[in-house]
Length: 288
Ligand SMILES: Nc1ncnc2c1ncn2[C@@H]1O[C@H](COP(=O)(O)OP(=O)(O)OP(=O)(O)O)[C@@H](O)[C@H]1O
Image (cartoon, rainbow, N blue to C red):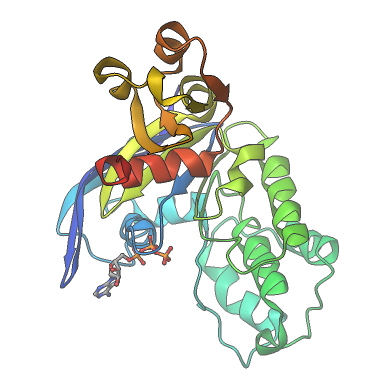
Protein backbone atom coordinates (compact mmCIF):
# COMPACT_ATOMS: atom_id res chain seq x y z
CA UNK A 1 0.00 0.00 0.00
CA UNK A 2 1.21 3.50 -0.79
CA UNK A 3 1.70 5.73 2.25
CA UNK A 4 0.15 9.14 1.71
CA UNK A 5 1.29 10.67 5.00
CA UNK A 6 4.23 9.51 7.11
CA UNK A 7 4.76 10.86 10.60
CA UNK A 8 8.05 9.92 12.28
CA UNK A 9 9.15 10.57 15.85
CA UNK A 10 7.03 13.65 16.29
CA UNK A 11 7.71 15.41 19.60
CA UNK A 12 6.05 18.44 21.10
CA UNK A 13 6.25 19.57 24.70
CA UNK A 14 3.74 21.83 26.45
CA UNK A 15 3.92 22.73 30.14
CA UNK A 16 1.85 19.72 31.24
CA UNK A 17 1.83 17.50 28.18
CA UNK A 18 4.18 15.88 25.72
CA UNK A 19 3.75 14.16 22.35
CA UNK A 20 6.20 11.29 22.61
CA UNK A 21 7.84 10.07 19.40
CA UNK A 22 4.51 9.84 17.60
CA UNK A 23 5.05 7.63 14.56
CA UNK A 24 2.52 6.28 12.05
CA UNK A 25 1.67 6.36 8.38
CA UNK A 26 -1.62 6.68 6.53
CA UNK A 27 -2.24 4.55 3.49
CA UNK A 28 -3.89 5.68 0.30
CA UNK A 29 -7.46 4.43 -0.04
CA UNK A 30 -7.94 4.05 3.72
CA UNK A 31 -10.10 5.73 6.32
CA UNK A 32 -8.02 5.90 9.47
CA UNK A 33 -9.66 6.64 12.80
CA UNK A 34 -7.48 8.44 15.33
CA UNK A 35 -8.88 7.54 18.72
CA UNK A 36 -8.10 8.52 22.28
CA UNK A 37 -9.77 10.02 25.32
CA UNK A 38 -9.97 13.78 26.01
CA UNK A 39 -6.55 15.33 26.34
CA UNK A 40 -4.67 12.34 24.87
CA UNK A 41 -3.02 14.45 22.16
CA UNK A 42 -5.21 14.05 19.06
CA UNK A 43 -5.61 17.76 18.31
CA UNK A 44 -1.96 18.48 19.06
CA UNK A 45 -0.87 15.72 16.66
CA UNK A 46 -3.16 16.98 13.90
CA UNK A 47 -2.17 20.61 14.36
CA UNK A 48 1.50 19.67 14.37
CA UNK A 49 1.05 17.71 11.13
CA UNK A 50 -0.65 20.74 9.56
CA UNK A 51 2.06 23.09 10.81
CA UNK A 52 -0.40 25.01 13.01
CA UNK A 53 1.60 23.98 16.08
CA UNK A 54 5.39 24.02 15.78
CA UNK A 55 6.96 20.65 16.45
CA UNK A 56 10.06 20.26 18.65
CA UNK A 57 11.36 17.42 16.50
CA UNK A 58 10.25 14.76 14.05
CA UNK A 59 9.34 14.42 10.41
CA UNK A 60 6.10 14.70 8.49
CA UNK A 61 6.11 13.54 4.88
CA UNK A 62 3.22 13.94 2.46
CA UNK A 63 3.40 11.96 -0.79
CA UNK A 64 7.00 11.07 0.05
CA UNK A 65 8.12 14.69 0.42
CA UNK A 66 8.85 16.69 3.53
CA UNK A 67 5.63 18.61 4.21
CA UNK A 68 7.40 21.72 5.51
CA UNK A 69 9.42 22.09 2.30
CA UNK A 70 6.43 21.52 0.04
CA UNK A 71 3.90 23.38 2.09
CA UNK A 72 1.92 25.01 -0.69
CA UNK A 73 1.62 21.84 -2.74
CA UNK A 74 0.76 19.74 0.29
CA UNK A 75 -1.86 22.20 1.54
CA UNK A 76 -3.52 22.15 -1.88
CA UNK A 77 -3.93 18.42 -1.66
CA UNK A 78 -4.98 18.27 1.99
CA UNK A 79 -8.45 19.30 3.12
CA UNK A 80 -8.91 19.86 6.83
CA UNK A 81 -11.72 20.34 9.28
CA UNK A 82 -10.71 21.47 12.76
CA UNK A 83 -12.81 21.27 15.88
CA UNK A 84 -12.64 24.90 16.82
CA UNK A 85 -13.69 28.08 15.03
CA UNK A 86 -11.40 29.21 12.28
CA UNK A 87 -14.15 31.24 10.63
CA UNK A 88 -15.04 34.91 11.01
CA UNK A 89 -18.38 34.76 12.76
CA UNK A 90 -19.73 37.98 11.28
CA UNK A 91 -19.19 36.89 7.66
CA UNK A 92 -21.73 35.11 5.51
CA UNK A 93 -20.88 31.68 4.11
CA UNK A 94 -20.21 33.28 0.74
CA UNK A 95 -17.89 35.95 2.18
CA UNK A 96 -15.94 33.41 4.23
CA UNK A 97 -15.59 31.19 1.17
CA UNK A 98 -14.13 34.16 -0.74
CA UNK A 99 -11.44 34.47 1.95
CA UNK A 100 -10.57 30.76 1.92
CA UNK A 101 -10.89 29.84 -1.78
CA UNK A 102 -7.93 31.92 -3.09
CA UNK A 103 -5.59 29.94 -0.83
CA UNK A 104 -6.11 26.91 -3.07
CA UNK A 105 -4.87 26.74 -6.64
CA UNK A 106 -7.39 24.05 -7.51
CA UNK A 107 -10.51 25.60 -5.98
CA UNK A 108 -13.64 24.28 -7.71
CA UNK A 109 -16.62 26.60 -7.30
CA UNK A 110 -19.03 24.14 -8.93
CA UNK A 111 -18.10 21.42 -6.43
CA UNK A 112 -18.49 23.90 -3.57
CA UNK A 113 -21.94 25.03 -4.72
CA UNK A 114 -22.97 21.44 -5.14
CA UNK A 115 -22.06 20.65 -1.51
CA UNK A 116 -23.84 23.80 -0.29
CA UNK A 117 -26.99 22.65 -2.08
CA UNK A 118 -26.65 19.04 -0.95
CA UNK A 119 -26.19 20.11 2.68
CA UNK A 120 -29.11 22.55 2.54
CA UNK A 121 -26.92 25.55 3.46
CA UNK A 122 -27.63 29.16 2.47
CA UNK A 123 -24.79 31.29 1.14
CA UNK A 124 -26.11 34.55 2.56
CA UNK A 125 -26.45 33.20 6.09
CA UNK A 126 -23.99 34.49 8.72
CA UNK A 127 -21.50 31.99 10.15
CA UNK A 128 -22.55 33.00 13.69
CA UNK A 129 -26.10 31.76 13.06
CA UNK A 130 -25.09 28.24 11.95
CA UNK A 131 -25.98 25.31 14.18
CA UNK A 132 -23.16 22.95 15.15
CA UNK A 133 -24.19 20.45 12.47
CA UNK A 134 -24.45 23.11 9.75
CA UNK A 135 -21.07 24.50 10.75
CA UNK A 136 -19.49 21.06 10.38
CA UNK A 137 -21.13 20.60 6.98
CA UNK A 138 -19.90 24.02 5.84
CA UNK A 139 -16.36 23.16 6.97
CA UNK A 140 -16.57 19.85 5.09
CA UNK A 141 -17.85 21.64 1.95
CA UNK A 142 -14.83 23.97 2.07
CA UNK A 143 -12.41 21.10 2.74
CA UNK A 144 -13.72 19.06 -0.19
CA UNK A 145 -13.93 21.81 -2.81
CA UNK A 146 -10.29 21.97 -3.87
CA UNK A 147 -9.79 18.39 -5.05
CA UNK A 148 -7.92 17.32 -1.93
CA UNK A 149 -6.63 13.77 -1.83
CA UNK A 150 -6.30 13.59 1.96
CA UNK A 151 -9.00 14.81 4.29
CA UNK A 152 -7.89 15.43 7.89
CA UNK A 153 -10.64 16.06 10.42
CA UNK A 154 -10.34 16.79 14.11
CA UNK A 155 -13.35 15.55 16.10
CA UNK A 156 -15.81 16.32 13.31
CA UNK A 157 -18.64 14.48 15.05
CA UNK A 158 -18.19 15.96 18.51
CA UNK A 159 -21.44 17.47 19.79
CA UNK A 160 -23.47 16.32 16.78
CA UNK A 161 -26.64 14.23 16.92
CA UNK A 162 -26.58 10.65 15.59
CA UNK A 163 -28.40 11.57 12.37
CA UNK A 164 -25.86 14.21 11.33
CA UNK A 165 -22.99 11.94 12.44
CA UNK A 166 -24.33 9.22 10.21
CA UNK A 167 -24.72 11.70 7.33
CA UNK A 168 -21.07 12.67 7.72
CA UNK A 169 -20.02 9.02 7.58
CA UNK A 170 -21.91 8.72 4.28
CA UNK A 171 -20.17 11.84 2.94
CA UNK A 172 -16.80 10.32 3.80
CA UNK A 173 -17.67 7.03 2.11
CA UNK A 174 -18.73 9.02 -0.96
CA UNK A 175 -15.43 10.90 -0.96
CA UNK A 176 -13.55 7.60 -0.79
CA UNK A 177 -15.20 6.27 -3.95
CA UNK A 178 -12.73 8.20 -6.08
CA UNK A 179 -9.35 6.54 -6.45
CA UNK A 180 -6.37 7.80 -4.45
CA UNK A 181 -8.34 9.38 -1.59
CA UNK A 182 -7.66 8.99 2.13
CA UNK A 183 -9.29 10.20 5.33
CA UNK A 184 -7.74 10.67 8.76
CA UNK A 185 -10.13 11.65 11.48
CA UNK A 186 -9.93 11.91 15.21
CA UNK A 187 -12.76 11.07 17.52
CA UNK A 188 -13.56 9.85 20.97
CA UNK A 189 -16.95 8.60 19.73
CA UNK A 190 -15.66 5.22 18.62
CA UNK A 191 -19.07 3.97 17.42
CA UNK A 192 -18.68 6.28 14.39
CA UNK A 193 -15.74 4.15 13.30
CA UNK A 194 -17.53 0.79 13.38
CA UNK A 195 -19.10 1.52 10.02
CA UNK A 196 -16.34 3.18 8.08
CA UNK A 197 -12.81 2.91 9.47
CA UNK A 198 -10.24 0.63 7.83
CA UNK A 199 -7.44 1.33 10.31
CA UNK A 200 -7.45 2.52 13.92
CA UNK A 201 -4.66 4.38 15.67
CA UNK A 202 -4.92 4.78 19.44
CA UNK A 203 -3.10 7.59 21.23
CA UNK A 204 -2.91 7.93 24.99
CA UNK A 205 -0.97 10.49 27.00
CA UNK A 206 0.89 11.59 23.86
CA UNK A 207 2.01 8.08 22.90
CA UNK A 208 0.71 5.78 20.15
CA UNK A 209 -0.54 2.54 21.75
CA UNK A 210 -1.61 0.72 18.61
CA UNK A 211 -1.95 1.18 14.86
CA UNK A 212 -3.91 -1.71 13.42
CA UNK A 213 -6.48 -2.70 10.82
CA UNK A 214 -9.92 -2.52 12.39
CA UNK A 215 -10.93 -5.99 11.24
CA UNK A 216 -7.76 -7.52 12.69
CA UNK A 217 -8.40 -5.80 16.00
CA UNK A 218 -11.97 -7.06 16.11
CA UNK A 219 -10.87 -10.56 15.11
CA UNK A 220 -8.10 -10.93 17.69
CA UNK A 221 -9.76 -9.19 20.65
CA UNK A 222 -12.83 -10.34 22.54
CA UNK A 223 -14.93 -9.74 25.61
CA UNK A 224 -14.75 -12.92 27.72
CA UNK A 225 -16.92 -14.01 30.65
CA UNK A 226 -16.96 -17.13 32.76
CA UNK A 227 -16.42 -18.95 36.00
CA UNK A 228 -13.50 -17.86 38.20
CA UNK A 229 -12.10 -21.39 38.08
CA UNK A 230 -11.03 -20.72 34.48
CA UNK A 231 -8.61 -18.02 35.65
CA UNK A 232 -5.13 -19.43 36.27
CA UNK A 233 -1.66 -17.87 36.18
CA UNK A 234 -1.47 -18.90 32.53
CA UNK A 235 -4.91 -17.71 31.38
CA UNK A 236 -4.64 -14.43 33.31
CA UNK A 237 -1.87 -13.37 30.88
CA UNK A 238 -4.32 -13.50 27.97
CA UNK A 239 -6.20 -10.45 29.26
CA UNK A 240 -5.64 -6.73 28.88
CA UNK A 241 -8.22 -6.15 31.62
CA UNK A 242 -9.74 -8.62 33.98
CA UNK A 243 -12.40 -8.00 36.61
CA UNK A 244 -13.37 -10.74 39.03
CA UNK A 245 -16.28 -10.92 41.46
CA UNK A 246 -17.71 -13.79 43.48
CA UNK A 247 -20.02 -14.49 40.51
CA UNK A 248 -17.30 -14.88 37.90
CA UNK A 249 -14.90 -12.92 35.72
CA UNK A 250 -15.17 -10.57 32.79
CA UNK A 251 -12.27 -9.29 30.73
CA UNK A 252 -10.96 -8.09 27.40
CA UNK A 253 -8.46 -10.34 25.68
CA UNK A 254 -5.99 -9.48 22.92
CA UNK A 255 -5.49 -13.19 22.20
CA UNK A 256 -8.86 -14.67 21.31
CA UNK A 257 -7.33 -17.75 19.69
CA UNK A 258 -5.61 -18.85 22.88
CA UNK A 259 -8.65 -18.02 25.02
CA UNK A 260 -10.63 -20.39 22.78
CA UNK A 261 -7.95 -23.05 23.18
CA UNK A 262 -7.25 -22.74 26.90
CA UNK A 263 -10.70 -21.67 28.13
CA UNK A 264 -13.19 -23.60 25.99
CA UNK A 265 -15.97 -23.12 28.55
CA UNK A 266 -15.73 -19.33 28.60
CA UNK A 267 -18.32 -17.13 26.91
CA UNK A 268 -16.60 -15.19 24.10
CA UNK A 269 -18.30 -12.09 22.69
CA UNK A 270 -17.40 -9.58 19.99
CA UNK A 271 -15.98 -6.43 21.63
CA UNK A 272 -16.88 -2.85 20.74
CA UNK A 273 -14.01 -0.63 19.58
CA UNK A 274 -14.57 1.34 22.77
CA UNK A 275 -13.97 -1.81 24.89
CA UNK A 276 -10.64 -2.33 23.14
CA UNK A 277 -9.64 1.32 23.46
CA UNK A 278 -10.43 1.45 27.16
CA UNK A 279 -8.69 -1.87 27.80
CA UNK A 280 -5.42 -0.55 26.34
CA UNK A 281 -5.71 2.75 28.15
CA UNK A 282 -6.65 1.13 31.45
CA UNK A 283 -4.05 -1.60 30.94
CA UNK A 284 -2.59 -2.89 34.17
CA UNK A 285 -4.52 -0.31 36.15
CA UNK A 286 -7.77 -2.06 35.21
CA UNK A 287 -6.66 -5.53 36.09
CA UNK A 288 -7.66 -6.64 39.55
N1 LIG B 1 -1.13 25.52 23.39
C1 LIG B 1 -1.08 24.71 24.44
N2 LIG B 1 -0.39 25.05 25.55
C2 LIG B 1 -0.31 24.23 26.62
N3 LIG B 1 -0.91 23.02 26.67
C3 LIG B 1 -1.61 22.62 25.60
C4 LIG B 1 -1.74 23.44 24.43
N4 LIG B 1 -2.50 22.77 23.53
C5 LIG B 1 -2.84 21.61 24.11
N5 LIG B 1 -2.31 21.51 25.35
C6 LIG B 1 -2.45 20.37 26.28
O1 LIG B 1 -2.08 19.19 25.60
C7 LIG B 1 -2.90 18.10 26.04
C8 LIG B 1 -3.46 17.40 24.83
O2 LIG B 1 -4.44 18.20 24.23
P1 LIG B 1 -5.12 17.85 22.85
O3 LIG B 1 -6.07 18.99 22.55
O4 LIG B 1 -4.11 17.52 21.86
O5 LIG B 1 -5.95 16.53 23.22
P2 LIG B 1 -7.14 15.83 22.45
O6 LIG B 1 -6.81 14.38 22.45
O7 LIG B 1 -7.38 16.48 21.14
O8 LIG B 1 -8.34 16.10 23.43
P3 LIG B 1 -9.90 16.38 23.14
O9 LIG B 1 -10.51 15.05 22.76
O10 LIG B 1 -10.38 16.86 24.48
O11 LIG B 1 -10.00 17.43 22.08
C9 LIG B 1 -3.93 18.67 26.97
O12 LIG B 1 -3.51 18.40 28.28
C10 LIG B 1 -3.89 20.15 26.69
O13 LIG B 1 -4.19 20.89 27.83
